Image (tube, rainbow, N blue to C red; front, side, top):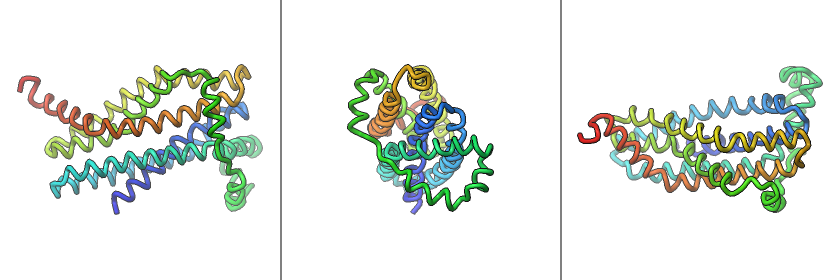
Length: 271
């Protein structure tokens, strides 16, 4: 049951994180990037809470594996978690156009009413929820794939995005797995998850964010068409998806690497 909760929550988190690209799309359409992002941050808050819930239940699954001496079975469960990430990303990519349309409407409503609580009081939560299905819109997959060639972000950008996201995908999982391999030092092993995430963040800020941010600015300033932004968002989503598949291969090696770092920190290189 705990594993099912972890899989559902992980899918939800991955979906929200992928759908976050829709804030760029709605911001480019309305010219109000900050407002679109602030509206989407309401969902992000729930996503952050879900991450804490995910880690709580994941830690419980790891403890059960340690107590039952079934660490090999834990490996399979963590691979399922990575698969649920892939599923969440696919769902997120499908909902990007829909959420972008909802955020676009929300941006104009925020201009009209001045704050989110006033939108709720004026429009009514039930009326808002009833309107959501009419905004459903599937992405133009073939068109986006063709447009990727025109955007010319390059295969290096795609591969870097995939590689960096693979770091994020396995940071917590590989650290927990390493902790299960060496139960007496599992707290020290789990702390290395933040190091892996930190490396991923540095690479993301240096190599990926500036390129995608410049493209967004070019679209807002009408130097590029909106379809270029749509294609780049689709490419970023594909990169995240590929990253989860790469993570499937890296989970065990990274867990062993973390175990080795913990061992070296206690015994030294020649201990």
